[in-house]
Length: 359
Ligand code: GLY
Figure 1: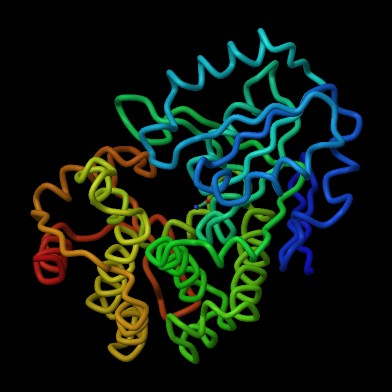
Figure 2: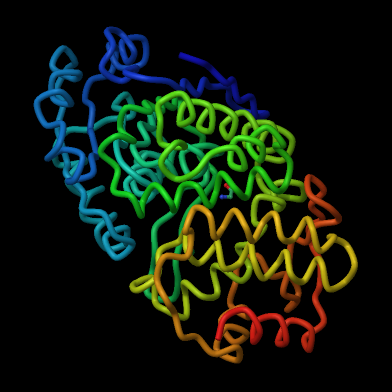
């Protein structure tokens, strides 16, 4: 097991990564033994696969309830959150209760949101079970639910008290979900963690899934992201580098209503587009851009075909919450490992790159 400590101004917690750590004795003891109730919000897929083992972990704690949650963005919504909060109140949950979220990004975001608002905030533990949640969404305290006007519009920064990333869960992760996580690993590799770039270049889809490699990419990503979040928890500046690929990615996801395309695929398209723009303005060499494109193709990160029109993507970019003063903000690369945030892109160049890459 390896540990990363994340210290923000207001909180400090450990992110443990490694094999078979969730089911090991005493992982939760210090945090949960004094709680009066524990709500375990758990992905239905994970509960089906690990039912008795998961319930076994919590057997010794007071008044533990299990709440299965279906995967899919549509379930992470404000209406369901309100119902859930009412159920916690009628179920006797207090300020001394805790929430544990076990699952992918949807479960983690929802569990985090509930913990952040219930009685002005109660204890939260994240147990991410997808690669994407382990390397990205469980780290750094972004929690949110969706409203009809948009994804993650209602939320906050709320740090958990512990993150346990047990890489054994990756063994039962569907292949496309694994690819979605690789996209965020690739993003970290491109914007600053060279060791990840080496691992991705030396492996392939099959070998990357071997335990040692999974452990390495989860640990290195957690370490990298924790360092960025420590410097800028609330995304006043530097943290925006983690949005590389996401200006285009979010617009495509929104255009396709979060249904037909996965977050990973949309961001992979975004990585291609934003690398291409960086090259066209002379910041990235042709060879560097090719390294990014080759990895996207080697790991098959865009695994379906999509028809999206340039003008529709541009329209959806206007509503991105990363925009400031009506300006669409991009992260661009001045070479690999050198991201620059808050960049504006000439509209004709943007149209040209989108047109060339996506149709
Ligand atoms: N996923 C980007 C961030 O957490 O800031």
